[in-house]
Image 1 (spheres, rainbow over the protein chains, first blue to last red):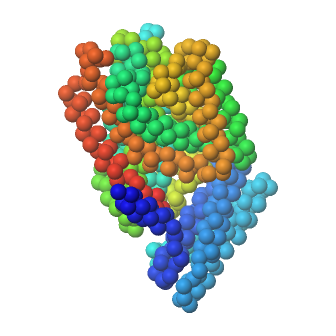
Image 2 (image 1 turned 45 degrees about the horizontal axis):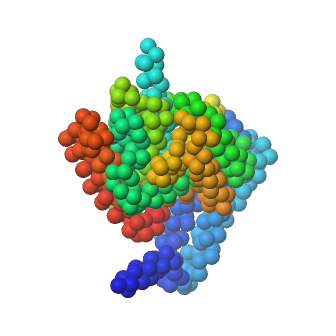
Image 3 (image 1 turned 90 degrees about the vertical axis):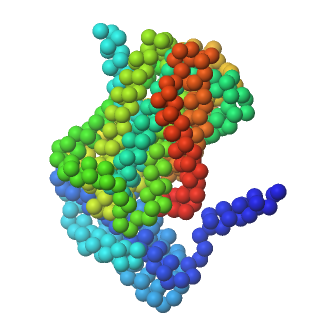
Length: 145
Length: 409
């Protein structure tokens, strides 16, 4: 009588675990998901910068938006970097994505620092690289969905 | 004139009180990811909550007892216990999410980490429940919650393609790149947010708190049939804002700050200030309602004296449950569990528990011993049975879909 419950328990435990990435397609899919998450953070920051440029939001709110955008991007990058690439092809993919992720998180950090210092007028200039980074991330996510 | 004012106030309160952190998060996330393609779920959810809240309110009004006060008597201790456990767990999770939501709203205004606000918010929630009169409490936060209408003003000022939005809502398709299981998972989350169990607990117990009599049956209907749908409209406004601003940019909102962006970009600082007041009022009001509902459900099951219509000294166990629930809810958020994640799980698990909450209401509302000539009509029963069928399917599908879609991620 207890056997079905044991089987169900095992199925749930297995379902709850994330196994190691053993193949390129799975790794590629995770890379695509990461690009999507970081693109979302970058686009959020761009909207916040638009609001700052037009003087449409107070500094505390903008700081909060930018802090959270940086945290989201950093957390996604950290998780992705922790995944073992299964082969050489995955190494290449990792390098390409990491370049975009590093550019994104670096710029988001600069925006957060400026916002915390109350230098809201500086935000549009600092955010300039994000347009290209966002395009790159969207394209990457689409190519590797 | 006084009666008219009371009815109008009730409707306004119902509108403002309808939206809580679950609605705010679920509608924005859905709009950002699926456009208006799941708007129909909000409509289904609003009809469902109207149907069962009206029943619960009518039971309380006619019998003078809250509906879950009668469940144990009518269905027995075992069935009522299953109902209690499921509903209490969901209501408690929702309470924790609302406390976190209030703290997040304050964080947006102050840039001080939300965790520092959690104990203060929890204390204020308890203090208001302890000290403030029920009607004052309900009306104040319900009316203040109406400030969320600013999101509708922003949408109107933006002048969107209304036809496009309507087309998206009336011709639901799963967007490219999204799977059907994920789409259905989000549909379930939206339904859970619209029909969350505490709403009927609070509504029926509130009717007893306010001493409704048969003369108030019309107030019950107007509150439910006008107030709730207009509250549902606010949910759709949040979805539309996310559809227009966040979806085209691929933004997946996981923070309250992102939900505010459409209003900020259209209405600027004033709009942001009003919206933050709305977020605060909606979440604080819901924290009061869920805190009270925790007390109502336990006290009504065990037969303790309950309610704010008696002095706290006369209902000590009720107030103790409320206090412990508020403390535990705050404790859960202080573990640094993301309040938005708690919200997401609370609304999805709420969907899984819906039949357990709503089935007993249907039974009690059909019992002539309690209801006399005010039992459900045939139409209400037919619709209620249809909803229960749907809710059972939803409850069965929720957990498998959650596992399959990794909770919609």
